[in-house]
Length: 213
Image (cartoon, rainbow, N blue to C red; front, side, top):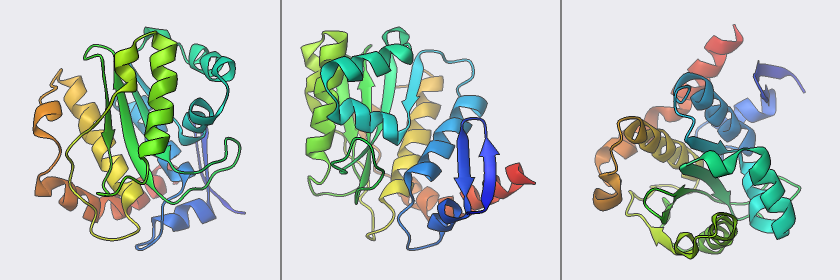
C-alpha cells in the first residue's frame, strides 16, 4: 500500500488517508497522526501532558496490571499531570478496530477523570471505566476510577465520532496551555465544536498533504 506520509513515529498509508473522506469512520492511524502532530507542534513545552495513541490505550484497557503499568512507566506517566486516552470499544488488545471513538482525560491536579463522548448512548462507558480503573490503580488514587461524563455536543451523524474526539482533544489541550480548567464546569456544548468538526476532515487532509510535499 502506498505511503502518504512518514511523520516522526507515525506512518500514514493511502487507506488511512482515505478514511478522511466524508462519511468514513476515521481509523486509529489518523488519530495517532493528530496526536503526534500535537506533541511536536503544540505541546513541546508542556512535559506534564501525555497523549496516548489508541493502541496503547487498548493495552491499558485490556492487559493485566503488570503489563499496563510497565507500559505507563515506559511513557514516564508518573511525571504527568494530564493524561489523554482515545477510547474505542474494540475488545482486542492487539488489533485495531471498534465502532466508536471517545476521549478520556485523567487529571491528577483535579483528582478526576472525565469522559467526552459525542454520542448520548453509553457505547464507550465500559471501555472508559476499564481505563480509569487501571489509571486509578497505577496512581494509587481511587478517585480517578470515578468517571465523570462531561457535557459535550452530540454528533449529528454516525461517522464523525473520531472527528469530534480530535476536536475535543485539541480544544482541551489549548485550554491547558492557558491553565484554564473552566471547561470542567461549562462543558463543550457550543456550536463552535460542530463548526470545527464540519471542516476538520478537509483541514487534516490539507495538513497531511502539506507535510508530505
